[in-house]
Length: 234
Length: 228
View 1 (spheres, rainbow over the protein chains, first blue to last red):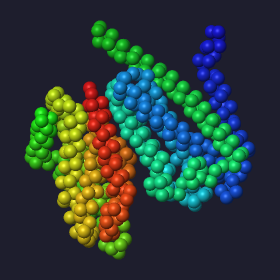
View 2 (spheres, rainbow over the protein chains, first blue to last red):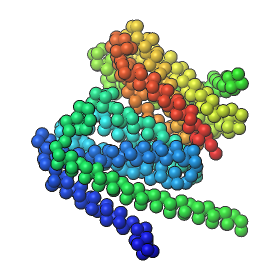
View 3 (cartoon, chains in turn green, cyan):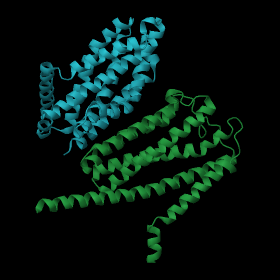
View 4 (cartoon, chains in turn brown, orange):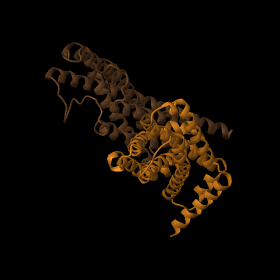
């Protein structure tokens, strides 16, 4: 019982799931999914790009909820969730901002077209980078948590704008799902679901690792404070 | 009634200080003027046709306003901190939401004071014909200024808490203010083309909506920023 619990704590199962998910994503995107007729092979970016965008939006939403949670409860746990979500959201947004232009270059003939949804993702990315910056500048951990929570909440206000921007700016972002979307062939839909699952699994693994790192950071800060206090008493 | 007295007392004290020192408005005006002049050279405006100028001027105008407001609000909030006036305000028995309201209002007043000088200068420099667009322009300027001021007040307080200046404020405010700036530029372009405000839809509504949202969020979060 003890052995299995310690095996779980090493994070090995998550590592195995992460590797399996990554392999499944590569297989589904590169081999299983058929080549799209108009766009060709570059369309395969879709299986990474869209799940990354979905996970980025989820992370920013979690960051805002954690920000509200921290401001209401003042619990270190909410702060750690917020810290982790902001960094992971920025990571997913970075992937979206890299894969989007690669696709755009092939589909539209330009790396960056100021296409509304990608542009708004860039804006959200800049705001959350601001939250990371504020946290690094603040000297006191409590102040850092408080101010970064405020920025994360404001940043999340941009998410509805990201979602609605296609309507507002009448852009040319392809709409695949929902109203006005062309839909996907069955194999493409399966490949997309595999991609979404693999990226979400990676998100869970990274979240767990970063959260544990945040716990270790907090313990170090607490230990340093205790040492300073004892030093002061001498 | 007591709340109104507190608001008026802070407004009067800050207005007197501003009239005496010009610590926020003077740098704002000079900065905005420099942006107009530099833009004239950078975009070679005299060489452009009137129609081409009309397409560029709204962007120049909103860059000047946004950056000048950042300069002004940063100066104002940093002066509060450096001269320890912020501590005095925090010790005063005044509701934090009300304090946000006062600082937000001061930001709007600073913005209006800037625009009263800047818009006629832009008309002269860029040979604009505002015709009957004055009222529409005033409305969109007010809505966007209210939104920018709300963001500047909240995030300016974050920057002041961290002991930083205009650079960090610009990094925090401008991305969040992007919808406001787009709304301002789009509406101004429509008005300068001689069309009515209604034909700029949905941008005036976006400007007004962001002003309301940012002011509400700012009022809710201001206390968390000020806490020691």
